[in-house]
Length: 63
Image (tube, rainbow, N blue to C red; front, side):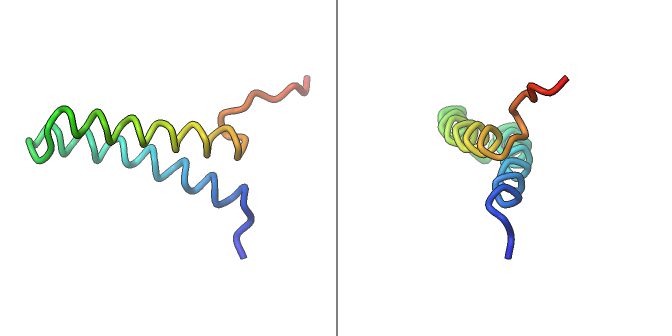
């Protein structure tokens, strides 16, 4: 079974890939600018949640 932290790391990496797919779809004219903005906003919310809760975007206090 996948641990929750590992699952959140996978979700974070998939959201990074999603940004390239959203940008590519907008560049090809498959989606409008407004739809790309909405998809990007949702994507960034999920990216921030999964990144911070998995520790990928957190700064370590250890020296």
